[in-house]
Image 1 (cartoon, rainbow, N blue to C red):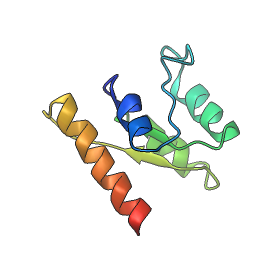
Image 2: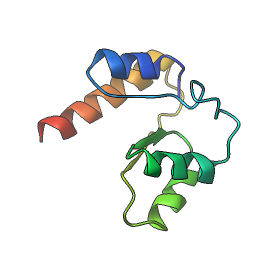
Image 3: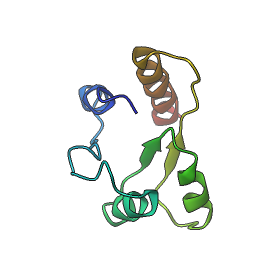
Length: 90
């Protein structure tokens, strides 16, 4: 995800953390997924590997997979915020 994503999420009222802040940028997907579960967090990623982890763990707290090919960072962030806003409103 673009580095500015966490800042945009926080500015819109979400309690967000970035794996880079946690010194976990080089951690494997299973380690990140497990961390998110112990902290009751949703994983937001562009990495399809999290889909397999989520399907193998039906009690997870959520995974949002974004597949925006060729979009600039601002468009990715705005798309994420729009999607989250529609879920929040629903």
